[in-house]
Length: 163
Image 1 (cartoon, one colour):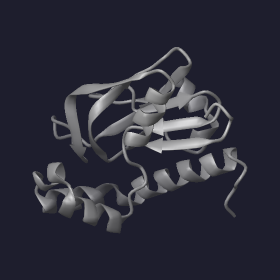
Image 2 (spheres, rainbow, N blue to C red):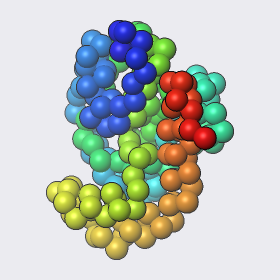
Image 3 (cartoon, one colour):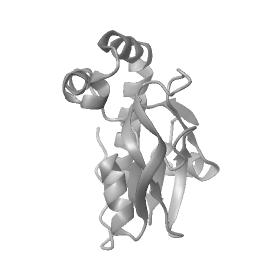
Image 4 (spheres, rainbow, N blue to C red):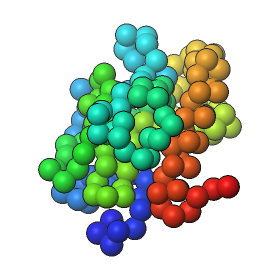
């Protein structure tokens, strides 16, 4: 990141990025697992004012559903900016420097990847498979579109625009 190479970290990737740049990884007060929060609402990320202005979110609504699978959060340094927050985990999307982005939640899931995770992850096994699959069905079109658009925006910012 010090060399200016674009970086995109998801979940542990965010945590490693923040720690490498002097921040901390701590236990989040509430484990965020699956599609729904403790109040049974879909997990959402809310873009901050700075996030709404950042080109990585061009064409993205100011709030969107996200899949969660973590029990940690990050503490930032002054050089880091929060671009997205959540109800139970404040630092959901972080920008480190000019071109390094970290996402605590998962925006990269395909349906096949999702099905593998719910079969193998111990925390996800505690949630009824049919509920997880039903929630994916509810959010799938918008969730996948949002994730794809963010990833395309990142590639464009990195000088590797997809046609």
